[in-house]
Length: 560
Image 1 (cartoon, rainbow, N blue to C red):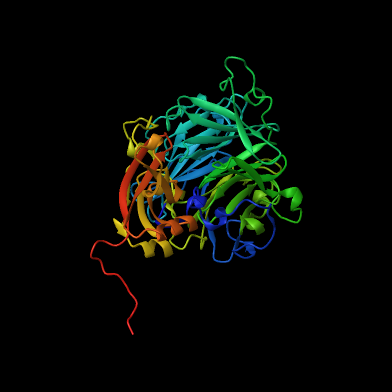
Image 2 (cartoon, helix red, strand yellow):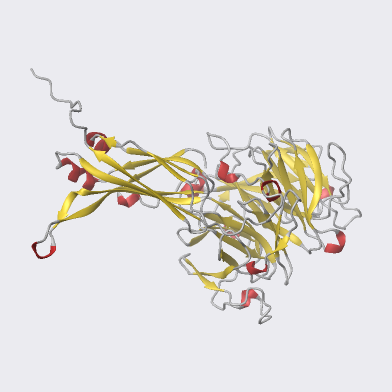
């Protein structure tokens, strides 16, 4: 998270979140057909992509052909490319990982394409093999890729994008028809979708985050008002009962074909293809809402929803499984969301295909997408597919790309000798707090107290400013009166990556009135607590005196 400001006024503002504009507001209404912020699509380019003005495309890889690299590569790219993500590498470049929705005999699994800092493709290689129907997956904050097998006995495989460390299965995340996975780094939980007509929406809580060796798998139970509760799946691996996970919790809510899922600042966005909906689950509030419903937006061009990603500007990009071969874009404020096409694959090469794997490079200026069954080898037959890059003036926050939307470096670069997963995190976040030690009463009452907060990892930070120097409570049995603590202001913030913010604490009306009655300086304590995804806590306490120092200059009225 880059430096941002957050504001709280007294206790009522506790729990405020730092989120981009498009994600800040309550999820109020499903999107309607509208205009794209990038303008209309132009005609097909040399690669067959219809794009808005100012954007251009290039083909990165094509199934059954060597990946064009500099220097040359003999790596034959697998067929049917599906879910993707990028990871920033230590040399300033990045790595694109791509699943293959095929069988192990035809070279399924996951491949990687390495880019140099200049965007030139430098290498291509396999990071996972001997698996089946690897559909989508998800990146992790610790530099690995989770690849999901879409079959009844499917597993999640944790992979190293650098190709240095051997991939490992993670059966604790459930044995079922996996589609995609996403990590909430603040709460230390994972969310998973199931590609079945009556699939479930799952949550996995590692026993020792971020280790994925063991933990609690739960299925969502959705109430009519959108409130979500969770129930344990008794036999996640199905080895004990042979009963599908989706049937082990009778009260759990079925979702009609879970597809892609992506985490963005406390919100899990996912799609269901059976009813053509895009959902948003607020992990902190425990509520779920529909942000796109094809039935309610019949004039929209977005039809069969699939993989999804979200940008730092709050734009939601949704792939289309079939239909008119488009990548849709949901944008705008929550109260007036609009959906429009961002790109379309045109021509005979793409007629029997589907759009998959949307993601961005670390800079947020290059989009990657696949056409899974493009380039048919014979009329009416599915083709091997291809991977494309689209570059251009993508919308970003004013300060540029946000670090919490960037993954990497890959595990094999950080831990070349292993382990693949860093294992249990037993240390609290490194927490640094900077504030003034004294603040004039007038400044605090009319303006604010600014506190600089920095952490080195994903964490939830709580800030409280309290004083036991304002009120007194009678002592029991006539004993000495006891101080009564007054909370002057508090707030909280989520860091999806390490970073720095400025907390702006403003007093509520009651606190201001109480301070006005004080003539002497008031001692108050600033308490800042950071909790990471593993539950480790770090805290800092500082005393900030309210009132001028003895002998300090004081403004007075001018004498006539």
